[in-house]
Amino acid sequence: MSYLQTVGGHRYVFETLKVLMAKATPARSGDYLAGVAAGDDEERVAAQMALADVPLPVFLSEHVVPYETDEVTRLIIDDHDAKAFSVVSHLTVGGFRDWLLSDAATETSLAALAPGLTPEMVAAVSKICRVQDLVLISQKCRVVTKFRNTIGLKGRLSTRLQPNHPTDDPTGIAASIVDGLMYGNGDAVIGINPATDSIAAVTTLIEMLHEVITRYNIPTQSCVLTHVTTSIEAINRRAPLDLVFQSIAGTQAANSSFGINLALLKEGYDAAQSLQRGTVGNNAMYFETGQGSALSANAHHDVDQQTLEARAYAVARKFRPLLVNTVVGFIGPEYLYDGKQIIRAGLEDHFCGKLLGVPMGCDICYTNHAEADQNDMDTLLTLLGVSGITFIMGIPGSDDIMLNYQTTSFHDALYARKVLGLKPAPEFEAWLHQAGIFEDGADLKLADTLPKPFQRALAHLH
Image 1 (tube, rainbow, N blue to C red):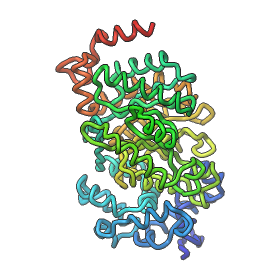
Image 2 (image 1 turned 90 degrees about the vertical axis):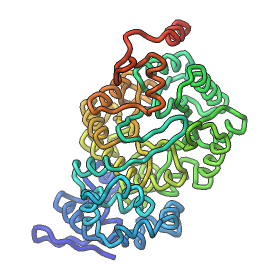
Image 3 (image 1 turned 180 degrees about the vertical axis):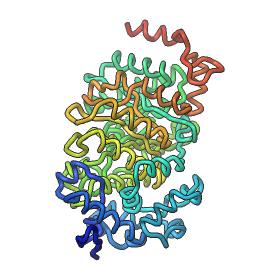
């Protein structure tokens, strides 16, 4: 099916929905690299106008990646909830945007609608939204998940404490953990990217995190961000593992490049559920995504990178995760060239994930060779905070010394919470006061002195 639009006396023809979606996407380097982007701003506007007139049911019959050859497409279509969709099934993409901005779109109605939306639908509407639309609509969405605390509640902002070390040195990792806790970080997860995927090294880190959480009675969860097969083996060896992690993408071929498929993710999900280590809930999966991953694996099917990113959220949604985050600027300037593109992409990803019912966080980040800096990250952090982001990263000094990229710091989380009046997860907040890290009777005020248990911990490290 082709789509037509006339702009400025020029008649544009978009041969398929896939082409129309790509041409309507705000400019980004990855789509130019893939050869699918609009040729100029006029063609982009024409595509956006044509996309606004597409009825939402079209996305159920015209697939951007073939149903017959892609298990992610089959998941999207086979799991679609027609009853939930019926509320908006009469709308076009443009009409859906208007509905999302209206008072009819409430926290309750959006939660009920989520199973009826496909990634392509929410990607399409994001492409015709300006920044303030993305912010306004996102902040209406609430996705609450639970393990040892409750994440995603209104008025809350959680953080992943990310104490990475280039050699997985326990002393260096422990020092970063204590540092992060002292700034109120770590309620989403204390999560380490290991320098090696060996089962012995991963198990050592899992046991170390378990000891820290248990010794100080911290109401949080840990994760070593290793391949799902390594986590399954660690569970088989009775390691005290909390969350099973995996990077995921929006096509079967891209997931194959990660060494995974839906069946393997189900195996990891079942293994995590078998442990029943959660205390207030058992959302036990943690997924990371990022625009450009399918293109970098030559597994993009000539689909624009933002639509494929939204499809990854359908994969995540299937396995009831505790956390999902887009590592928005991590892959590099080949996919998101500068601060402007990173900011737009981060807001789109959060918007699409939240509409699909996914507990979205964002690694607000950039690589050192991108045309971006920490001021851009401050802008995105603030916009995402206003948008109701579920969680962000907390890393010493914003500089990940193992993965070698720039992200948000422990201090950045304090800034966002203070300026926007946000708090950590309630169970974690209570612990911060009980432990003496936050002053009693004062919101988000750090105690003047380090609590004695942590003084002893730092003395032991020295």
